[in-house]
Amino acid sequence: MKKIIAFGASSSKKSINKILANFAAKQIEDAEVNLLDLNDFEMPIYSVDYENEFGIPKQAFKFKKTLSSADGIIISFAEHNGAYTAAFKNIFDWISRVEKIVWFNKPMFLLATSDGARGAITVLKMAHDRISKGGQLDIPSFSLPNFYQNFDSKIGLIDEKMKIEFNARIESFSKNL
Image (cartoon, rainbow, N blue to C red):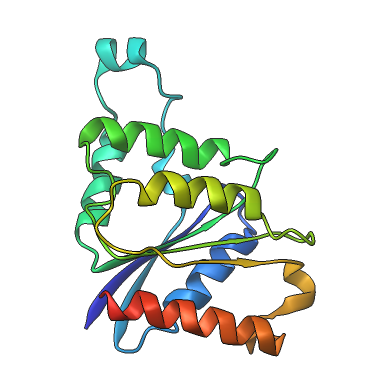
């Protein structure tokens, strides 16, 4: 059984990106899904001064340990002003201080969604460019625009063209597990 870590890169309790990440993870056959909530890993805002005085918070080590136990990682990015959410960026900054290889070269599937027509594509491109840099595996990605019109909690993706694209990307991810 493959172990999949999934999370929405948002601190929203009603995160549509967390919903999408969970949906994607559940599409993997014979997988144990661990859906993370970034609120469980809240830390002080990263600064070198804080790190020098107090060290790296235990939550950063906990997050990294959780990632290391996975066979694959699924992240769905929320977009705040065209970039990562502060919650994700802060965790990313801290875990990069624990160990240089942040994602352990694990197979990853990157997603983004929003209630708008662009589907958080700007942050998805930013994340894909950063995370895939120097990586050994191709990292599939998928953007779902207009979440509330294109996703149903009972059936998943509604639009057939989007469903075909999503399924091709999830299959690509699955092959790397």
